[in-house]
Image 1 (cartoon, rainbow, N blue to C red):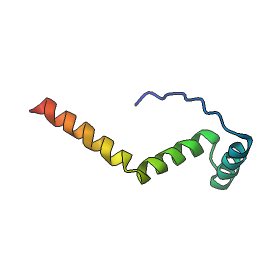
Image 2: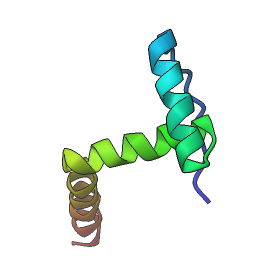
Image 3: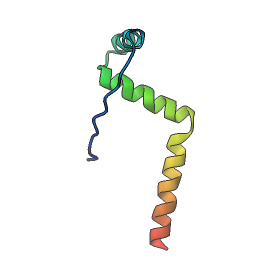
Length: 64
């Protein structure tokens, strides 16, 4: 299982209220809500696909 990292996030009062509202609507913790938002944003920017491709290329180079 991959190790987890702890990240501290500083939010404005308004951002905290939005986070609380999102968490309440989704029925998730603050941590889970932020994680889901981050991953959704990364998907929108195609960062997930790019990262997987880079890892695949590194793997292939080691094999070759």
